[in-house]
Image (cartoon, rainbow, N blue to C red; front, side, top):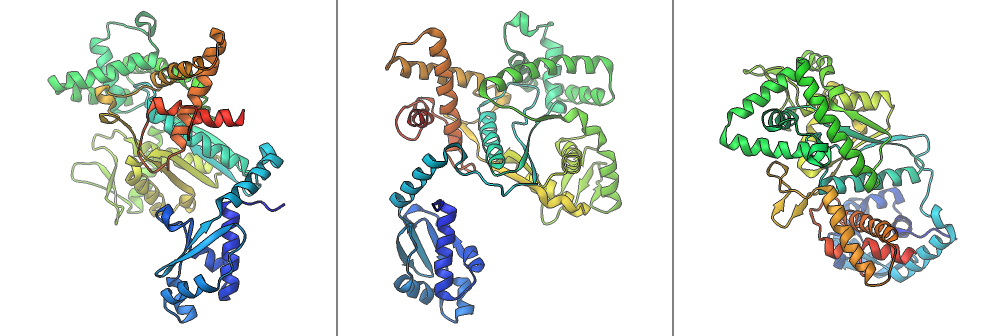
Length: 463
């Protein structure tokens, strides 16, 4: 039985058009695109590139094809639109065949070996160790875990990676606030998870710094002490870091996030010197008038890679870590799942590797995704106006319990277990059903509905 899916239909369409026009199928495939709106069909053939070969105007080509092309099975109709020819899939035809194949192949449906012998690393989550995981991390983890599973299903050797951003000025800001105002508070004495406790002091720092701007310089001094390996500073850093990581572990376990390898920024930042020297020697980097090391990246904006006081920044670490990842793990593909706010950053990072002449620079990919918004707007962790991951899971679990209790009575243990399973499905499906590049507004009440396009409905259908 033929395997019918969107990719197969695209190939069938390309074969029909290629045969009709006497043009290689490979050329036609490149010209078939997805229209900007559903009203324009499922596929569109742009005829501009065919004009020279066929010695006809693009509009003529589209018009003639609309009258003479025999549509392959799986297509309902075609429609000319100027120099484009739009094609509409017969969705009933496709659904019938896909469902039959799913029933036949069950858990192996969609599997392939196209990635056999290739290794891909997917880096996702990437939390800062100065605050709890938030709703944005749940979208990040959902995307990262999903594409990791897809790559694995296609035969790739997949390494799921996380990077803990455990050093830098933002970490020192939380440390300073705890140092000044903490009174030796601990997760045990405060009866809270360690990540929430440290996050409280990160928010407190920014509140206090509005009243006393000198705190910013004090935090920078703390960073200098940390990089100089001052024992007292390192002890405070380790204590708060351990509290946060323990909190992360609990949230990850609950949400189902897991990793094959976890990198820590503190293990790599200080190894940047050889790359800095290489960049200066090759003319890729230069020292500005203040003494900072800057990468020349035209046509992209220049990028500071090392501060004038010699302290490192995010990109300092990513230069070292990316090189380590690709070369140590012998990667064929290195994917960063990071929000769209960092689109320019990753273009700059990848451009540096290209200019340095690293042959593997092209294996790096940034999987960009849109922001998760609150009713009030964007997530703002500095002000504390953020939905913590734990709180969101709790909230959606409570909503799921209400829905369950409308339908049946369960023991307390079974109710808790089932509600959490439904809550996780609701959250993950909501995060994945939207195009990753689009911003989303998560609405808990809608997400737990047992009707419509929701995680619980998919669970119910499968069950």
